Amino acid sequence: RCPIMGSAIQVSQESVQRAVRGASFAIWTDDDGSVTDALMTYLYNDNLVVPIEATNLEDALSQFTETDSSSLIYIPNGYNENVTLGQQGRLKIYANLRKLNMAETQSTDIVTSLINVYNYYFSIQKIENLIESADAAGTPLGYRNPITIDYASILKGNVLEIPPMAIFSLVMSQSIMLPIMVMMMVMFAIQMAATSIALEKEQKTLEILMTLPVSRMTILGGKLSGSIVIALAGSVSYLIGFGSYMNSAFSFVPDAQSMSLTDVNMGMTPFGFLLIGIVIFVTLIAALAMALSVAVFADNVRSAQSFTSVLITPIMVPALVLMFSDIEMLPLSFQYILLAIPYTHTMIAAKAAFLGEYFVVMRSILFISIWTVALLYIAARIFSTERIITARFTFGDIGMIFKRKK
Image 1 (tube, rainbow, N blue to C red):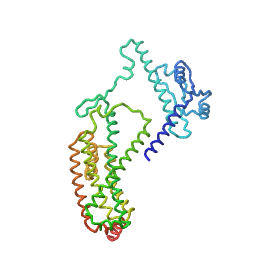
Image 2: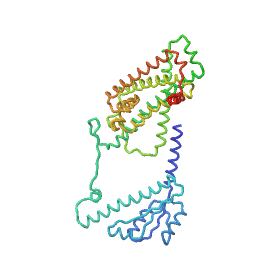
Image 3: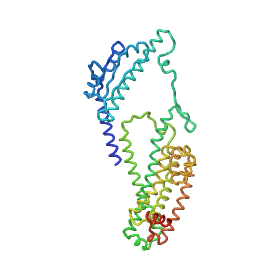
Image 4: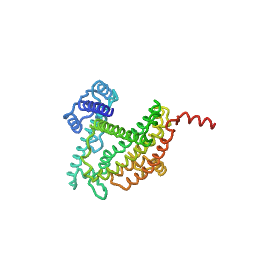
């Protein structure tokens, strides 16, 4: 689905670009003079212009709406005089919104950009003339923009002559995929494990499986390993599709700066990959043990899916929050809530490994491992008894509990 969506967005963007490239704009002036003529000459140069011949503005707007142009540049009376006297000359752009689409808006933006370019060079020329007439020192650009800003970033003690936003954009584009991969992998694993148990209970095959001369722990291990394999395959295919979607959907956006992770001394080292592999493995085991323990109480597949939707929420919340924010930036109470969720530490570890903060990764591994051992103990206890066959629980039971209390 992701590649199809990305291709559809790419086609729509390309059609908008073609429409904008072939778009025209109209011009009507109620003024004359050398300054007005210079502006008109600039606008007519290499542009598809529709001239409007009218006696007043109302007539000009009426003619403009009958053309195929999306924008009209109106040069009012007094523009030439104001600019000549050193005052601001005002122009007005009318946008004809027929279909309320992106092409009409971008056409107006292009006209605005044309005028802004002319405005910049025209002001530089006027400042240069004033400097020459006053016999003053300096340059036109120095008078127009007295202050310019250069950016540098300090990363891991190294000073890089790179704007911070360029580094942030690079890090986000590279590291955002890792939390998404972990989130999707855990979600696939939970759904697969819960559906497997519920389907066997619904079709009465779980009883047969339990009577076989096979250890219950072997059955539990088989279900865990099988769900992990399916989850890995599903998450990899999802990432391939998601990457294709992002490339297709945003291919029209030019890169602000060509830069790689090696240029800023960042990225995953082999040791970082090893730690992340341990984090993902332990997280998957914990999620699967929890899913199997909960799915035992489902009557059918539909009930199991309802249960897993409750389990998936604590996974999505930390992933979405930490994808756009850092844990230290959040309110203290919200930090405690997130840190109490084991999957928060998985997301923190993914970002920390990317930044080379391996102590944070190992701390997260310790916390998740404790949680995993507890869940495995619960799952083993359930699988070692007959509750795995006889246990039943639905959301309707919760309603019955509240009714009894009343």
